[in-house]
Amino acid sequence: SYVLTQPPSVSVAPGQTAIITCGGKNIGKKSVHWYHQKPGQAPVLLVYDDSDRPSGIPERFSGSNSGNTATLTISRVEAGDEADYYCQVWDNNSQHLVVFGGGTKLAVL
Amino acid sequence: QVQLQESGPGLMKPSQTLSLTCSVSGVSMNSDAHYWTWFRQQPGKGLEWIGYIHFIGTTHYNPSLQSRATISADTSKNQFSLKLASVTAADTAVYYCARDRRGSTWSFDHWGQGTLVIVSS
Image (cartoon, rainbow over all chains, first blue to last red):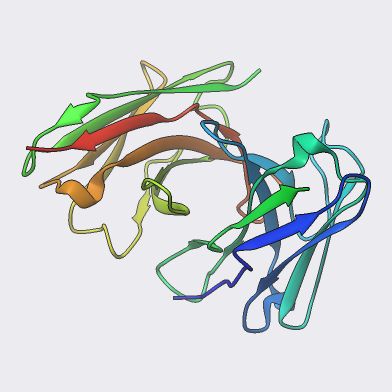
């Protein structure tokens, strides 16, 4: 099945920009979705179809996707952004349709 | 608004069959062309897709769980369910039900709060 690779952790100071990557073979040809998950809570959809945001998600969260890497960018990071972040794709080339990356823990210093 | 709520046994013994229910409110499962989906998250691990049931009744499962998992729906109760046979300690996890976002390529914008299932003798 399709494999998505994320860095285990990213650290950033408040007010700075965090960049979380999601690698996959030709991932630029797929639609990538991003979630964050805080301890004890369900995942929340932040970005869908590479770069669209559901209503209520701040513009500070943005996504892009090209080649073998998709990226979630969090601008003006706040302490409340500390969470686990997951990328996800639909892999219609296998029976394992819904694939997640391993997750990235964002630490706000 | 759409809300999903999981319910389940909490604690189970190995070899039993796990049975979870997701109660849907705010929308009729029959009225929308959505994929009603189960995920799980083992302690300290990432998210794992278990499978879905489409509103017309078709199902699809993660190949790694396909032999043990069954998803069904009771639209009269606006619920869908997951059964997982022959559980082991490796099935200890928080189980989430979710609904896909219409118009996106399989993203999920409505999730239940999750229910913890512990498998222990």
